[in-house]
Amino acid sequence: MPKKGKISIYRETKLFNQIIISNKEDATQKFSQICEVKSIVEPSNNYNNNDTEQLDVDDQAMGIQSKEDIIMEILSKLPVRSLLRFKCVSKFWKALIIDPYFKKKHFNHAKNDGNSQKLLISLLCLRDDKYNMYCCPLSPLQQVEHVQKLDCPSLPTALHCIIRCCCDGLVIIEARDIIDSERLILFLFNPSTRESIVLPDPEFPWRPSLLGLAYDSTSGEYKILKVYDGELPSEILALKGGSWRKIDKHPRGICSVSLAMHSLAFVHESFHWIGCISQSYFLISFSISTEVYGEIPIPKQMVTIMRGKHVGVSVLEGMLCVYTNFNIMIKATLQLWVLKDYGVKESWTLLLTIEDPMIVMAVPRYRFADGELLYWCMRRHALAHAFRTSSGPFVLWPRCDTVQHGFAFTESLISPKSLTY
Image 1 (cartoon, helix red, strand yellow):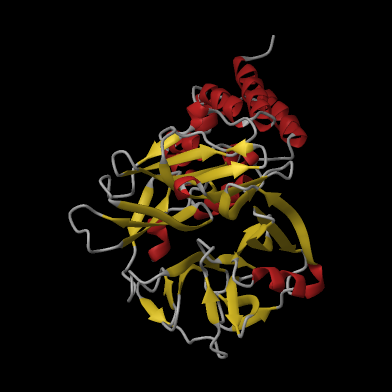
Image 2 (tube, helix red, strand yellow):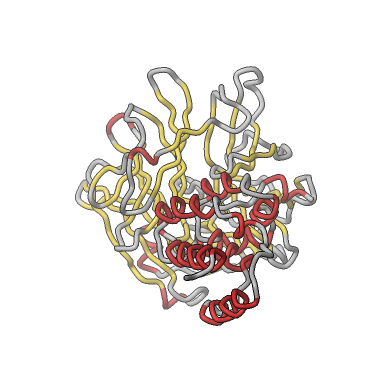
């Protein structure tokens, strides 16, 4: 008969293997069973020599991984919501989950996991003039019951709550409180963990601008770029630095075009936006580490369409894309071009065209695994905002006549508070 220690080990190994091949919901349920097995949480000394020999065989079959390695591997595949609960299992699990290396490992897995892709939206309900925030799944198996209602960070009674940009599971929220309605406040917010910090005030908080948030791999810190319309110089904030500073203008005095953009696009270690000089359009790049400007040309057929139209740039599946909104025979049209090889003008490719007579302006937000595009749009009917796909409206949150803003993001464990020191 197998000894009790062997039975426990076999049970633990079987459960671990089940979790590795399970989806997240099944994994969370099975992990609850593991929490009851003390020998997984704390090393056990109850094995005799025969048990040790059996363990050696099992270790060889499992790639000679320690229990700690196995725990890390399994936890890195679980949703943030479950990990926040599992911090209570033991001191070891808590220390593991808050460790920067584990957070990076977890996020690298989440980037390629459809269940970790979310849509964060802010709604202004016109009936009661109140803002609400919702976090919705973007997986094909999305369910209304998985939608979470969130409060605006630190300001549950905000008069104004707009999502400005996102990066690595973090978003920048612009809010205005009832008590001090003359001040705009910027928050760095993790909607998955609900953690937030208040950011320093830029010099011109009320001037129209675009924001971009990104990680500088050279300095090892997150930075925020704020690009103003008109002649004002841009500002940059290094989170570890703690204050905004002005940066040099583009050497050619190029005008920024931001009417149809909600945020700066970041790819290849640079921020991007549309520039225009003498009716000539192109992409402006700004290196996050060297703070040097660059230009990326746009094909002539795109430039012809762009003149006088709503144009913008975003990132889909790691590639820069330029979108244009124009009318053909009184039919509103959205065209989306992608730059397949960064910096190579000849690699611009028309990805798709969407025609809808009810759309005034559209901005791409996310591309599903089957190629379908999720986009934010302004509708002709009362200039209402909405999220749509080519199949129709995309609505999981409570329905009402609202002004909607939002971004797709990947859930993460990154703490805003840890980025300032």
